[in-house]
Amino acid sequence: MAVFFVVEQKALSCPVCGSNKAEMMGKHVKLSGQFEDKEFLTTDLTVLRCVRCGYYMFFDDTAEFTSEDQL
Ligand SMILES: [Zn+2]
Image (cartoon, rainbow, N blue to C red; front, side):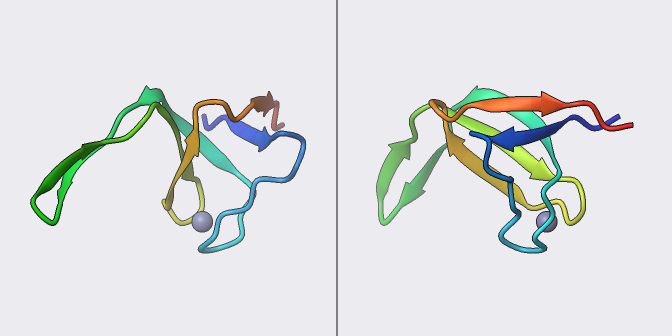
């Protein structure tokens, strides 16, 4: 059962398929990696995944999300 969210009362919109339904994948997620020989670590992120196309969306942890029941 997916959980759906609205970002700060604006409709969430997937940049790939335009779906406004996404599943919460994690909060306070830090991503690390390497770019041109320098390692980096992001700040805490909230990760949502589009339920239609699977695209991952990353938001600053200060973003507010509210869940909506979908019946
Ligand atoms: Zn999508």
